[in-house]
Amino acid sequence: MTRKAKRSVAKARTASKKTTKASARKSAKTGSPARKKPEQKLTRRSGADVAKLQKAVIKSLKAGKSAQSLAAEFGISTAYVYILKNKG
Image (cartoon, rainbow, N blue to C red; front, side, top):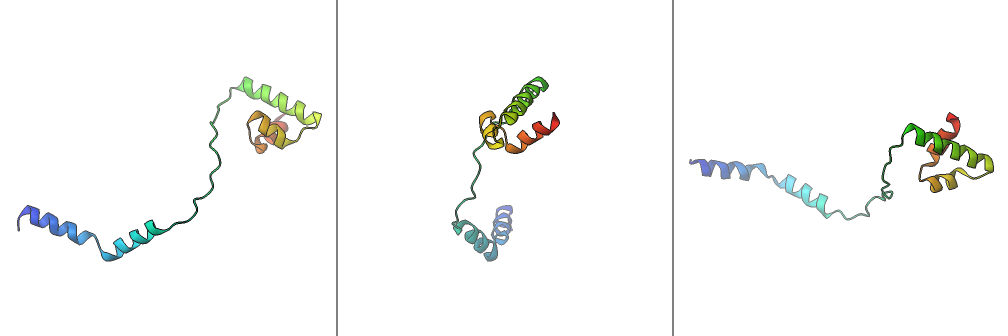
């Protein structure tokens, strides 16, 4: 056999019927895609910025604002609001 003939035989052997059926089933699945949260741009804060943010969060919490409203206002998660509250 020539090289080309050997290559074509080798290529023909690699694809099995089971593989093609599995890939056909995989691509035929139509389901609703998982909901993704809207991507927020991650911001890296300096120590001074965190200190300012922490003071503002503590002041607002003492004033009676909820953690959810603060999180929306500052663009942070509610968990981070509680972390900042407990650090101080």
